[in-house]
Amino acid sequence: MGDTLKIAVLGGDGTGPEVTREACKVLAAIAPLENFKFETTEFDYGGERYLKSGEVITEQQIDEFRQFDAIYLGAVGHPEVPPGILEKGLLLAVRFQLDQYINLRPVKLYPGVDCPLKGKGPEHIRFEVVRENTEGLYSGAGGFMRKNTAQEIATQEMIATRFGAERCLRFAFEHCRQRKDRNQLTLVHKTNVLTYAGDLWFRAFEEIGEADYSDIERDYNHIDAACMWFVKNPEFYDTLVVPNMFGDIITDLGAMIQGGLGVASGGNINPDPAGCSMFEPMGGSAPKYQGKDVINPIAAIAAMGMLLRVVGDQKEESNLVQAGNRVEEAIAKTTPRMKSMSAGKMGYSTPEVGDLVAEAL
Image (tube, rainbow, N blue to C red):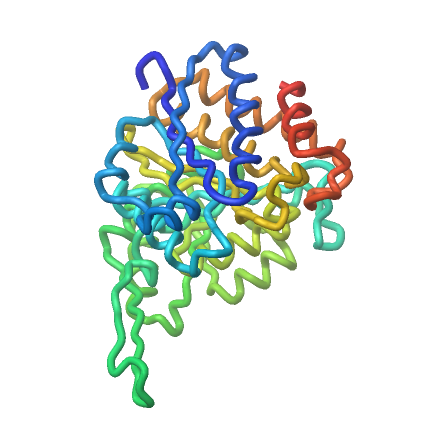
């Protein structure tokens, strides 16, 4: 890291810059408390730039991110940009080119946050999902035949490699061990139908676990069963590992049971100490709330806390890890003071919530 934590900041579209501002406010508050320096550089990649230039981001521009310790992203999504252009042209392009092969999603119910599940509290919802982030249905393999005819054929291939599955599984086993919770790792797939890709993942899971992680209890769920258990007994889970598309689905379900996208954050991680990872709130750009200062910044602030913990752990900077932990603790002190996690119903404005978290540090 050097003497200064260097962060590339992409505020993005809609309310993205508003929640990013609050995350950076909390970063500025924790830095002197944990004795570290930081430097942020802003980039304007997003919908407005695309509409003006016709360009999302180039490979050379993505390469510029390698000089940073991490990327912080507010939100991407513009009502005048067709779906898929920004998602594939920016988010997936950054993930693939910077080899951010892990998507890490904590599913944590904060104190005072309403849970849609009857009788469930923070002690029941405290697990993490490790999602493979660069293969599967997102790899882009497939295409059209006879497009725009009555005989049109579209294919989208699920790609699974032993290399990709194994590095994700090893990260998940290590992460489960590091969490020091219940030492239980659950693989989620659909082996009874996806008999090739599922078999590869399951064999790798069993072989790696047996050889190198005998202290970790292994479990398996079909994806449909996992969705049911998320709702019925979320306390069953400690750490989960899942291929790309299924991970995309269950992490949104996880966000709902932890109180909504306003509190859910995640990281697209390259675990190499020299790699560059990207952290973001899970909520979208919410353009209808733009400029009103009513959007919930808790997820954005949590993403900043996650950035500090992950980068600190990778680069063995204990003060950054402690800073991230303190941000998490400050969020837990703030959420009980809020009336709701929904936009416009928090009882505070967006900047006021950021102030509360900063003060709670």
